View 1 (tube, one colour):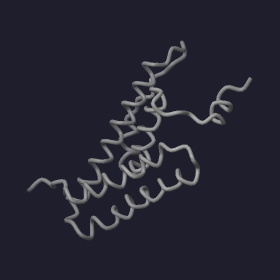
View 2 (view 1 turned 60 degrees about the vertical axis):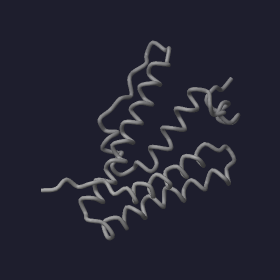
View 3 (view 1 turned 135 degrees about the vertical axis):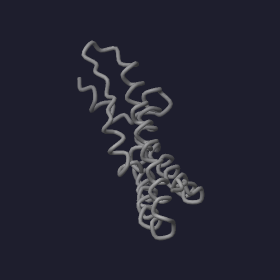
View 4 (view 1 turned 90 degrees about the vertical axis):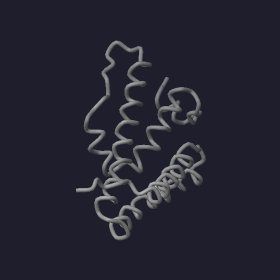
Length: 137
């Protein structure tokens, strides 16, 4: 039996959609931030179209590669957050469940993990109202 190859054309389509979602997830302004939903929608529309246009094995393999990548990325973020946390009651957030969730929710998980990682590293600015809500005086 031939292995189900990843379809490069649809992989590029999915990369564009998740890139769109990630780009607009990192903005602070609310009307612009809402444009990320179009990227999430595009990923799920492609999930419906791929089994129709591609052999089922190829469509499934293409989708699952992104799901596994989302699980790896989210676990990497959790690991870095664990290493950076100095509190004594810290616990690692690493979980096999991220891979299971990633198979269905990767269009949301990838931009979220990238956004959280960049915010933790200080690359992204956290809005003032979120800072005030996290640290009440």
